[in-house]
Length: 353
Picture (tube, rainbow, N blue to C red):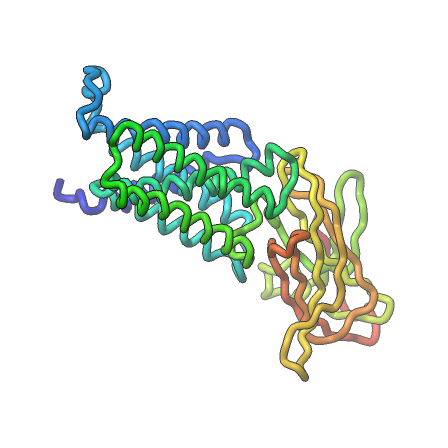
């Protein structure tokens, strides 16, 4: 009991570490069935605890474990938020939609400190809506084999409908507070639903289940069997950590290659775009230099090996943005181009993918 105040933080760290090493690909059936089972248990336990509190259940078997149900609800919420934070982190871009991942991590940690408050119906239904919507947001595209804002809207609205069905059940069992209070409880998930739809619209929610595995700028590519070799300039000896050209030395006749392997679940096919951006120092803003469409096929662990070539390029600061067809950012890569007289000034190394 002396160290009880440290239990929530230790529980969070242990649970998050366990999820990080045990969760596989986002389309693994066993992992998704486990998360679905967690959701199902929550939809059973939350009404059960309120029925027990109102003395509507007399079953000796259920009453025997009554004190453990709040702990189970806490565990299930923590497990779901933790798993979703990991999946969304894999798909997030640090320059734009990492905020939603931070929100999920905050909720994961918050659940560990809310043991005595998770019996509040406002809090339960708010959390339940968020875990349901965030699960369906990546589970439905896996089932359907497609990714779009329409599917995300279906996910959010389905989660809202499930919450309202539970509210209807509680109201039917006369477990709801005063009718005016009931309307407030029903309105809260609706507000969260509207917020999620707005966040997705402004690209602040990662485009799960897609994820950018790597991004690199190279001088040339060579196919060797089933693999590709991407060649980059040998860096100075003290830059032992780098496998990229920075700056990129561009000689007449050279080709610049952007390589972005993208993971997509098995059976999912979608379009992504390479947005080539150039920083205009006169106007002080980024301008689109080129736009190239690529079709991604899901299933490969290391990601679909998507790359584009460019033979004409301007010197200065450039940025490659990888986006979905609806403009959701998967990642970006900034680099500088310096034009040189010939390509004999540098030695090339390669990576194999």
